[in-house]
Structures are given as C-alpha cells and as structure tokens.
Length: 177
Image (tube, rainbow, N blue to C red; front, side, top):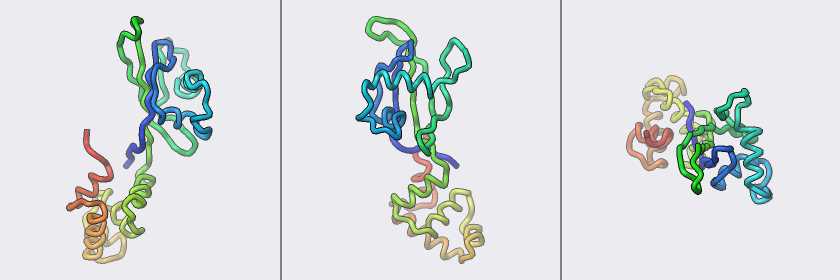
C-alpha cells in the first residue's frame, strides 16, 4: 500500500520552462535542506532546479519530467500536465508541475498512529486490517483472541471518530477520486 500525503508543490511553467507561478510548498520541496526564505531570486532558482532535477535529459525536443523527485529522505511523485493557454498575449504551451509527497504504507501508518495517538498494538491491528485480514486472522497473527482484536478496533474507531472497520480504512487511504 502507498499513499500520497502533505501539501503538494505546484509550479506553472511557460513554453520555455520558466516559472510563471508557484506555491510556497514547491519552493520548500525543491530548496530542501535550505530555508525557502533564503532563496533569492526565486524564479532563477526554480528555473535552474527544474532543468537540473525535474527534467529527464534524453535529448528529446519535448520536455519530459522525472516521475519521482527526492528531497532529503522524502520522495515526491512528479507529474507534469501540458496546457494550451494564452499567457499575456503570448500563445504557447504551458506546463503545470505537481509534486506530491509519496509515503510507503509503513511511513503513513506511523504518521497516522501519531495523529490519532494509537498504541503499538492498535497500529499493528490496523496494519493487518489494511492487508484485508479478518479479525480471526489478525488474532492468529498477533497471538491474541479475536475479542481482543475487536476491542483494539473499537478503540481505533473511537480515536479516529469512525464507526466501522471500513471507516478506519477510509481515513487512511483518503477519499476516492
């Protein structure tokens, strides 16, 4: 299981790959470990970073972006969208670049455990629930009774403010598109 979390970085580029607009998260992601407020001038920094880190350099005429960008120990999914638009009376191709935090299931479960103050055993129960196991199967894996599993799940439901097992899963994987 993997999920995407955190505020995404967004950059809008003109046809020459120069930034037109961006959000603070994009600067934070691309500037790490430097502090974003120390980056001057931002447009030049972004242009350089896009060309050096976000573009695949395969000699193609059309720009092709990497699928994944690493910022420290964090991984970001990089998606580029081509837009046809009229920018300040210039007609051309523009590109929107989206950088979304990618987390493995274990990383997201740790973050979730902190957010909802889950104990280790409650987290373990949720992890097994996410694998699609029944209460009896979870109990066998954890060497506890099925009633204890149900008790853990009830505690998790209270902490997450949901009323069903699928509600727990829904909180973790987020809303469906």
